[in-house]
Image 1 (cartoon, rainbow, N blue to C red):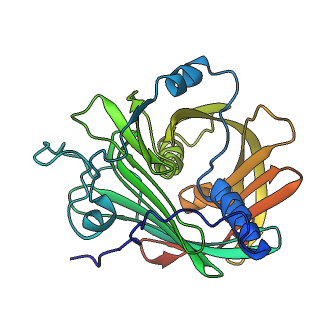
Image 2 (cartoon, rainbow, N blue to C red):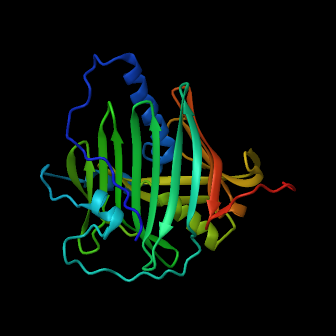
Length: 312
């Protein structure tokens, strides 16, 4: 039996007051910037009319909306986010995604954070993507549970927990028997319209990897639909070309993608390595003249450490 990953319990305590020390204010800003990199979170993409319609149709539901036990129960046992007794959909384990571990060093506004990410899967085809990091006296933990059917990720649940001086929690649950997606945002539950191919903030990264593993020819434009907070957002990605990046493991050839934004002063880009199963090697997010960056410093796939290409 796998060791349980226990997320911190949300206490429901209010956010610190505006009079909190400047260091904590800065900490909150940095954590927000780092999350923008680690989860590719950013405002809605342009030119996608169905996105605004989805956002408008989000339905507020009372705060005591039944919660799943996914954060604790899901880590060590069943992580199905549907109602008790909901039928499980068998999932094929025949797909190109392989278990991996990766460590990233991120930096923003003079502070840095090490993020540890891992993808694991069991014999039933259930995949678990986790990300953990700590900065000063606070920590970030994310867990996404999903299966793979053909070339499509089928998300089940997502939990984001920020603990410490600033406490925040987000949840997204994809019940296969329900007509809506349940989303916890700022202590309130929302019902989002269920649309085919909708992902969560973490599983969308694995969906891109899955697309590239099945078809290594990068498409000029890729659109991923993501349930995030009170909205369904469309992430529109544009392939920008190849680039060799030097890493602590050695140089590696990468594919660069940029995410389109309405505001010209905002920029989001990331680099993935075909030789490393399209693992993310670098991400960059620029906003308000400030840059947040994450770089891969070590990784292994199925227990084998990655090495650079000396011919790159």
